[in-house]
Each structure stands twice: as C-alpha cells, then as structure tokens.
Length: 137
Image 1 (cartoon, helix red, strand yellow):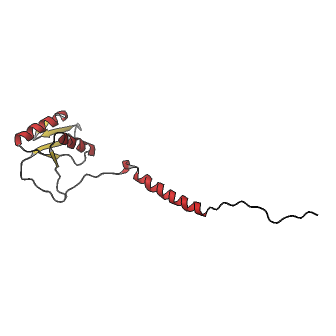
Image 2 (image 1 turned 135 degrees about the vertical axis):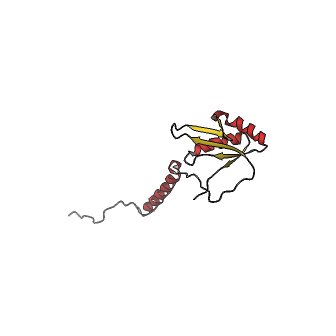
C-alpha cells in the first residue's frame, strides 16, 4: 500500500517589498530625466515694466537685422562697425567719453547666444554693459 503525502514544497518569492522599491525607482528616474534635459527649456527674452533712464550719454551699441537680406548690422553711436572691430571701437569711444558704460540695444527676437557674445566683448574689454529694453505695454 502506497501512502501519498498531501504536503508538497512550494517555492515562494515575497514581492511586496519589490513593488515599493520599483515604484520609488520609477519616480526617481522620471524626476531626474526631466531635470537632465535642458534643451527643452525655452528662455523668453525679458520685458521691463519699469524703465530706469540714465542721466549720462553713454556709448550705444546697436544691433539691427536688415529685413530684406537678413544680415546683422552693428553700429556704435550710429556709426556702422564690422563685428570683429566692435571691441577696439568700443574701447576707443568709451575713452573719448570718459565713461566705461555701454548701452546695448538688440532686437527682441535675437538668440541668447548673440547677446552673450556681445556681453563677452564688453567683459573682455572691462566695460559695463547695460541692456536697453522697451517699456512693456
């Protein structure tokens, strides 16, 4: 006579702790992935609600884009200057006026990199740069 046992060994894996850990890992990677991608952040150009007017006549550096040819034109105190000559001409004009402050006028739809390049020219030549804005309407 053969006697069969009703007790058989069943292997089990406790998964209750694993689901909590996986949830926290999923949240962690979602948050990190949104912070790690700076290319999707748009930087709008600032608008000023209050403008402060300067009392002195500072040197003015203006950038204009020709609508027909789409070419940038740089001018210092209404005199057109080539891009590679901006630094020396700015230094010369600030020495003439005895003031190291330059007012920078740039189109509102230009790239941030163009603004940074012009600010870098001022930094290299140890000039104070002020970004001119139009009053927000």
